[in-house]
Length: 308
Length: 257
Ligand SMILES: Cc1cc2nc3c(=O)[nH]c(=O)nc-3n(C[C@H](O)[C@H](O)[C@H](O)COP(=O)(O)OP(=O)(O)OC[C@H]3O[C@@H](n4cnc5c(N)ncnc54)[C@H](O)[C@@H]3O)c2cc1C
Ligand SMILES: Cc1cc2nc3c(=O)[nH]c(=O)nc-3n(C[C@H](O)[C@H](O)[C@H](O)COP(=O)(O)O)c2cc1C
Ligand code: FES
Image (tube, rainbow over all chains, first blue to last red; front, side, top):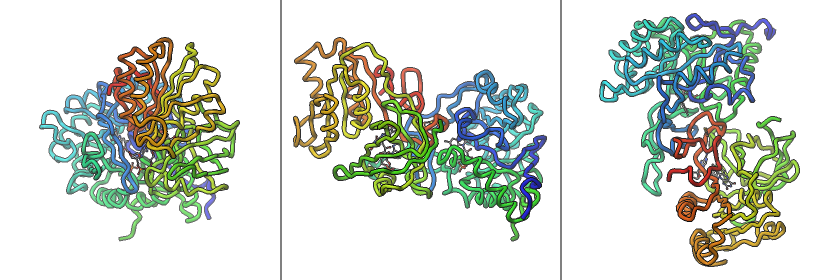
């Protein structure tokens, strides 16, 4: 058994060096402050905050969430406080910690993405950007940016020009060929890709025959999506040279290791934060114990180590 | 004090069909909840159900505490099978409770169904003031806590949907009739209520019409309970607010129905 001290958990994502591969998934950890009571934020690999846009966004009418078997559907509608408020009110708190802050962001036009990226690039205390491309494009009849390879290439390459910080592209899983989308993001200049965002889904109340979400359609997350996410991470790992950040239904260290074996360099914990607010720390400790037991010196050696 | 704690079940008493009174002993010292605060209870360790279930503080017993709940589906059904000695993992107290620091000595409390769970906690905290409780339930057997209410000197006006106890009416109509007969009820009175959505809506319309000030405790599906997922919002005059964080107690005039 390896001595825990000699275990190397560090991973590299673009210019970032993370102390361990465990980060939070956007939208499930707020802006970090609510969780400081339960988790030592200094222990996390990175903190990924709720998706931000240039202007604050109100979001969808309720009900916005509904539980489904081993998962949940959400239609929050990207409610957020806006980039300026984030920089003014939330970033000072996050700067106290010795943990990289990754800001998830989106826009409804390419111009908005670019302006958001410029603002965030200039903000002290923002270490990397994660662009969410699973959102509707105003100029293209509200079709999703991340489902058309040409649009994806365009928006990512424009943002790349505006952002000198590490750029992660968060892929939409609601596509036929996820490997192709990862390759497009890589060609457009992304430093890493992250996946999966939620899978679109729907649930109906059979008593009143109405959709359970006011928005009718929502995004599925939680353990229910995990096998789909593992498959997609593996396909992306084979398609690109840049690091892949894996997420989708991780609730334990074992789940996280499954993603790493499939090809993830790092993982993000989402819905599981709702099950237990201290789960991120538990997962980090669990990965360390697994490595000690299996006598693995560096977590990097596990990435993509599945034998097919 | 940690808001994520374990508690052992002292008792999980079935009061009547589908209604349980759960008495818990926290294994460490916890923050004293205010009436209207709630806990997110993990009903099991598995993935089904996945999320914790929100339940209001019903009674604080000097460190131990009680939850009063109705079996509504899978989660509460699993909860009802807990036996003395079982350990539950709980998050809380959460949310903003009823404002207790009020000048008025005259209080109207309205509870619909399980709304009595937090309204009882509130009545206990406000004991000493002039409390009028209007309490509606589906049927006689589901009228709970009457003995405990009497001990704190509260004699509720009761109505049931089937008329098996009190008048056969909904409780908001009963309150309206009281106010018509006794208009002083709306001057210098403060209203507090908890119950099903349609009841709270009708009550709010009435309160606004009669310029009766007050607070209502709302429910919404929840995931985190901590204000991070933004899943539990309600529409207010100042935009969407989170039931778990800015609520569950809101002032009546604030809610947009
Ligand atoms: C702040 C707050 C305080 C509450 N206090 C009490 C209380 O003191 N006593 C009591 O009996 N009940 C209380 N409830 C309601 C209780 O949380 C639900 O009855 C319970 O979550 C149902 O879970 P279930 O798995 O048994 O039923 P399910 O089969 O999941 O659902 C049954 C019903 O409960 C609703 N529901 C499901 N999940 C949730 C959720 N996560 N949050 C809210 N509602 C949900 C569903 O929309 C459905 O109408 C409270 C709810 C809130 C939001
Ligand atoms: C309530 C909620 C809000 C989310 N908000 C965002 C968001 O703002 N931006 C984003 O890129 N992903 C968002 N996501 C997606 C998650 O970051 C993650 O990709 C997805 O939930 C899968 O991981 P999980 O199964 O571990 O939750 C959200 C997910 C949930 C459940
Ligand atoms: S339950 Fe998550 S914000 Fe209220």
